[in-house]
Amino acid sequence: MEYVSALVPPVVMAALFIGVIVTMVKSQGGANKAKEDAAVDAALAARGEEPHPAAERTAAAAGAATTEGAKGDAQG
Image (spheres, rainbow, N blue to C red):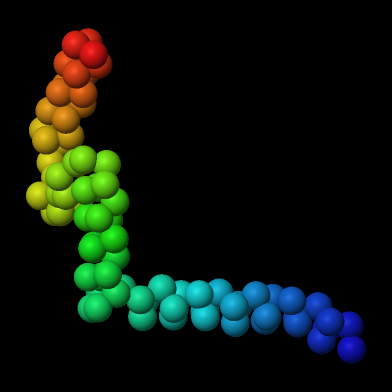
């Protein structure tokens, strides 16, 4: 019976882990993606920033934003 008590915690953890992974996979894309994107766009609009899709952001754009931020800090 010791083997049963030794195996219960790993089996329970494995089941919970599988449940978390399944939930994450099911929540990707579709209507949920549109809701998440809308929430991020609303948060950015509230901060006064323009929403940028992640696919269009490049290292150059991120560098330009940092440079512009530094200019604004120097002026203000």
